[in-house]
Image 1 (cartoon, rainbow, N blue to C red):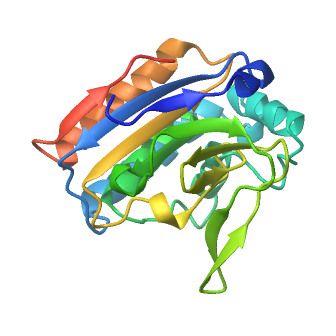
Image 2 (cartoon, rainbow, N blue to C red):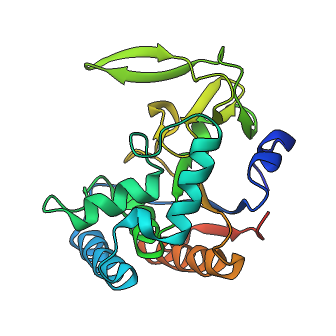
Length: 230
């Protein structure tokens, strides 16, 4: 793997059932959302509705497991939902899923269809390797508030993804920082599909394989590597 990813022992102890699948992709072609990605998102919403069969997203066993983990590190899961639950709620609402750009639409569709938190980071903006750790509370999280850049700090003990420059995503997979987001100019990316027991690892692998296929479809010729679950 060109970009190193590590999960700290503290996080493993907090969530022993945690598994992630990483997909590295280079030579991607991004741009504004298309009719193709819009169809993909609509189909994902339909697949989600079938999967839930009338239940609310948080009643799904996988989403319930994420809520338990969020509670264990001091976050209130009904206020700061994991990314998959938040997207699922959007998908089932009148507003529907947002259209952002081709790459984000593709991984959001996989997240919703499979009810798995999925994130995408611009490899060219990541400084050093990425680490999933419990925060000290002193790390910088650079975000945008009111149209202006601002710096926040995670809560002590909060689970965060970070690199050498600071936090890239708060509360595990709740809010991504703008520095490493996939923009229309992004050509290299790392995608993370994150799962907890009771979701079978094979289900996460299937979601990863589907994401890889879609990346190849929307970026013909891209160099895509799916790494084994960790």
